[in-house]
Image 1 (tube, rainbow, N blue to C red):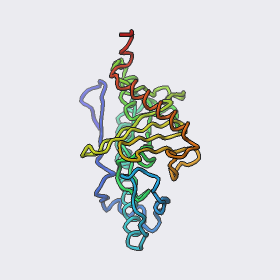
Image 2 (cartoon, one colour):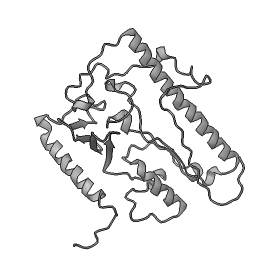
Image 3 (cartoon, rainbow, N blue to C red):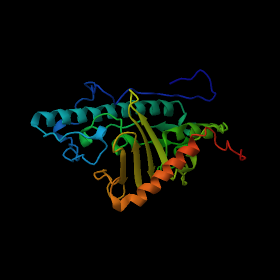
Image 4 (cartoon, rainbow, N blue to C red):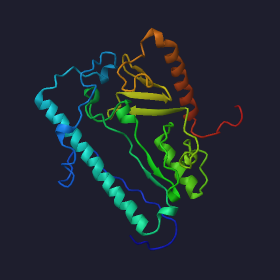
Length: 275
C-alpha cells in the first residue's frame, strides 16, 4: 500500500454483501456446513399479536424447507466471513504502511437480516436481527478493547469522524460523537430512533428503543408493538395491547412524540429564544 502524499486521508469502503443473492465464492462457500447451522428459534411462534403486515402464517418445517433455510443462513455467514477477511487485508495494508497509530477504523453495516426469524426474510421491520447492528471500532493507536452496550445510532458515525479529525461539528448535525466511549468512558443515548417507509410508501413506522423497552408504531391497523428486551430479548410477546403494560406503553408513546418534535426541528439549539 503506497500513498501519493503524507497528508490526512479518508477511505470509505462499502461492500454490497452480505446481500441477496447469497452466493459466496468457492473459497468461502464451505465454511459453515448447512447441517451444523442452527435454525431460527422463532420459526414456530404464532404471530397473531403483531401488526397485520408482519404476520406470517404458520408453515411446517418440511425437510425441503429446512434444508433450504440452513443453506440460506450458511451462505449468509460465509459472506460475512468473506467481508471480514477483506477488511483484515485492508487493516494489514495500513499496518504495513505505518498508518494504524494515527487512523480511526469503523466497521459496521446499515441493517441486519431476519434469516427466517418469525418466518421473515430481509428487513422492513424493527426486530433485533435487523436493528441491533454491531459496530467495531479501533481508535488511533488501538487503545481500548472493551465491549460497550450503550445505545447509539448509525448517524453518530459522522460526528465521531469529525471529532477525531479536529473539524467542528455543524450545529445542524443532530447526531453525537461517541469518541468518549472509544476512549474508555461512557456515552450513548438514553433512547434511539429508527424509521421505516416501504418502497411503495404504503407502510410507515417509527420506533423508539430505550435501555429496556422497544416501542414501534405503524400507520396500519393494530399498528403497535412493545417489547420488554430485558425479560423477552427474542421479542416473542407483544405487550402493546396488554392492559398491564398500558401505562408503560403510553409513557413511551409520549417519549416518542417528544423525541420526534425535538429532532424534526432541523437544528440543534435552533430555538434559542421563544417566538
